[in-house]
Length: 172
Image (cartoon, rainbow, N blue to C red):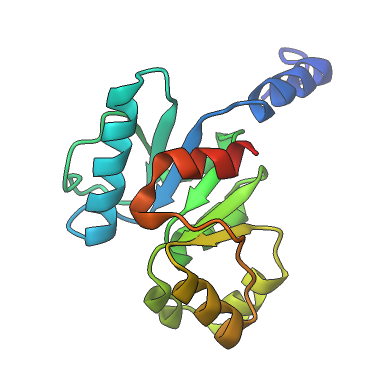
């Protein structure tokens, strides 16, 4: 972007505008045949249908058709670098993408702790040291993560993509 066309002050104002953004964005490496993707899209669709002014979007690296058509925007995960609002990863790979390319507040909804076994220990260590806000579906998941990885999660539990609870978490 040319500095003459888009002054520094305007960039600062634009950043402030989007940091007050009250929508939610999820990042997932795939939206096709998985229980996690199905549950997320069903809950997102219900959430948007109940109030069309709820702003929710998805970022995905997959070119496959979603398991269910989302009632919200779906962007390529390469566009995460342009996202100014809160970003919620739903698996370890999407967390790595989010923390690599997104400069805003990152969250990780640890829906399935089993997926952590597929990432290197160095990434697990990076998770523990990060400023990401971690939350889980259950107390059992939270205790497992603390005991085995020394990973702290917030006290609030989010059963099966409860969008109202997630909105409270990301919007304070």
